[in-house]
Image (tube, rainbow, N blue to C red; front, top):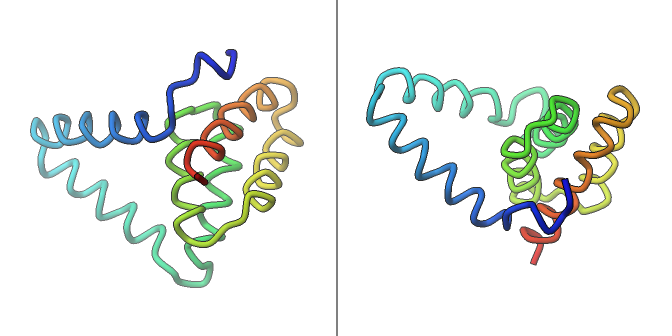
Length: 117
């Protein structure tokens, strides 16, 4: 996937929000339950939200989920992660996932460039 084929991260997040509204409208209780679960998981506890977002970045790159990468990069930035920390989290995924995970680092880089402005 060429970086110019990757949608702007702001647009990708807006699309996710719009689509999730429609999904939640169709199955309100399930969508609300999932959002509550995510809120609880990412809340500061033994690990702070920034650390959890960095873990989510590594898992997202490893799972090769462009939406998850963009969402997690945004969450990490919102919680004070540096560009260097975000890149390092991505490289942890590459160390486990090899070349296929490495190809998703371009989505991480594009998301970071779009969202860090």
